Length: 276
Image (cartoon, rainbow, N blue to C red; front, side, top):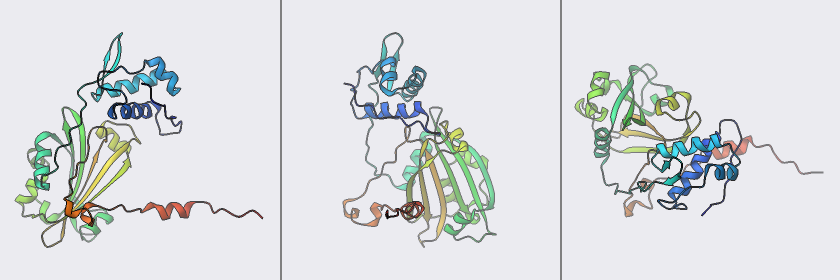
């Protein structure tokens, strides 16, 4: 079965091979091409999407690197049978989830500093501009593939004694608990962000490619903010799984959509003038 081909965008910052990769990946995951079936030939894909064979090969190489296809020299490219995406129950507590993530991945500490937080983060943590804060940036790696960048800010009273050496041996949450932090409610925000040159290099992806950005503002039981952390992941490698109790479906605890950019976009649009 040959699905319809979406038109690839030929604009700066939108690589053709990445667009082709995403299109082919969607057809594989939605089973347009069943497990074990052969993808169209390189020549067919080149003609179908109006791109060069080099572009097709780069897209197929990325699919093979992600385990979505198997390439057999002289035979063709076939949908891999090991691409099922399990949907486990998201019943872990936040601390259990942090413990699981730490146990499954290796950590590389990229930066540790004690410094004033940026103004926006200082406001969220209720710090003055002169207050020092603990800052840690870590890269988590699974099977030698970077899967997550975490960027955490903590008031100095909790992070004063935390070092890079300690973070190499213990997850941040364990060190914070040991220094007297107690977790209460969490405000979480999820959005998309284009990969900056620095994030692209750290996560081994392309500059400008879409990343999933998860921000968490953690509070203590007295509702005082005690940590602000952002997590960046590559969507092709990592999913965010959430479970919402039935009784919470009609409450804000199930999440809400906030359309911050709508009014700004509308204000930037040129006004239409009626013809006279």
